[in-house]
Image 1: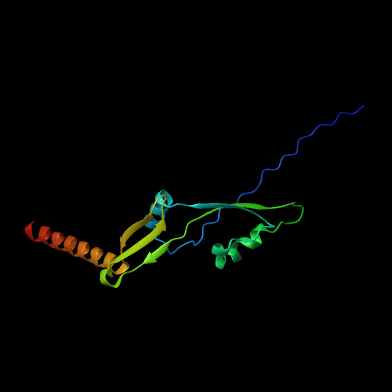
Image 2 (image 1 turned 45 degrees about the vertical axis):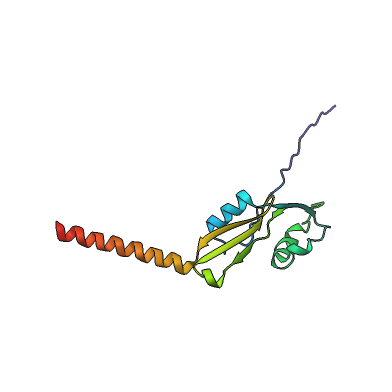
Length: 138
């Protein structure tokens, strides 16, 4: 008599996809993570991608959901958030990011890229003046 025993285990491979990879400032992403009302969906390779997720994301997701050789199926847990970037002509130095919140839209305000450069130049100018003054006085 021969007793043979074995355990074959296979841990699923997970892949994290963040899209878009860039284009949203870090502070706006953090605000959206904390206060946004995220939608969650579960997809398998047989499911169609919801209409509001189509476009570039569908092209990114569909090939990853196709089962490969020796696989039965693939699945994806997605969470997504619609986000609007708004620039008002009267406040051109501000960029408003709006996303749905739990009870009302969440608005996060950041300075525009031009305003950020102006602030950085002003700070650099002040540092240069302070440096020159310290050299003159010593």
